[in-house]
Length: 194
Image 1: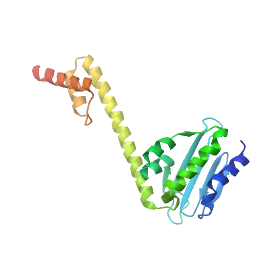
Image 2 (image 1 turned 120 degrees about the vertical axis):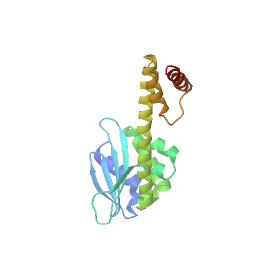
Image 3 (image 1 turned 45 degrees about the vertical axis):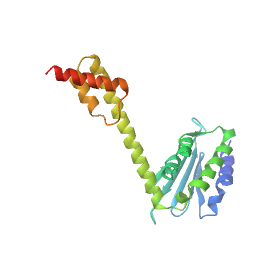
Image 4 (image 1 turned 120 degrees about the horizontal axis):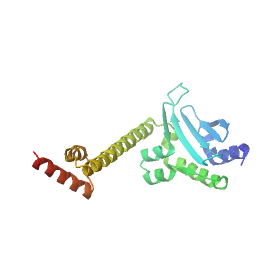
């Protein structure tokens, strides 16, 4: 596929946006920007390495060129409670042969589920940013939990029961059976050693 064929495919699949005040403003190296006065939609295709397709929505303040809020298509879908679709669109790849079909799916999702992003409703962009923040906080929390459990298991094998108690008792989510038992036994051993 060459750049001209890609441009034609973008126009074919996303032409419905042109009837809503959007125009294609940039296209280079399989990276396309379709924008209106308030909203900027980027569609990028990495045809050289990963074959990944990236779709982002950006909301601008009146009269500003830069987007104040940028969200991936999966973040947008989660913001409008389309969780199953968000998982499907979180990592998209397509060979040149599949690109027509995948871009068609993306255009359909934009029409059916993400029109509020297209028209620039601030509340949905705010929801997407809040969702991103929650996802990041969950990721950090999960990583901290994994690290604490890993360190507690090492401390257990070194018979550092006070350290096991310190690490595992600070975890708010339920522990698995083995770690719950380690915490109980370590707590008992700390009490009896005093």
